[in-house]
Image 1: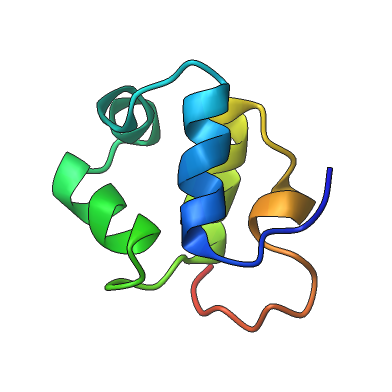
Image 2 (image 1 turned 45 degrees about the horizontal axis):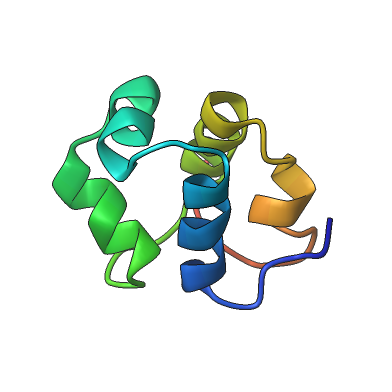
Length: 74
């Protein structure tokens, strides 16, 4: 699976998995609003949220947050 070039790519992958943004937010224990902000680039995608997104969606972490991406968070 190729790495993401835009956050919209992550939205498309989530949709392709048959998941709604609300389902993913619930699985990650974040609000729909926060996940929307992350997916639209208004909020940072932290390593922690990237790991949660990977677990919740089955999308490999290396696709969500490629090595050296430089995002903040633990």
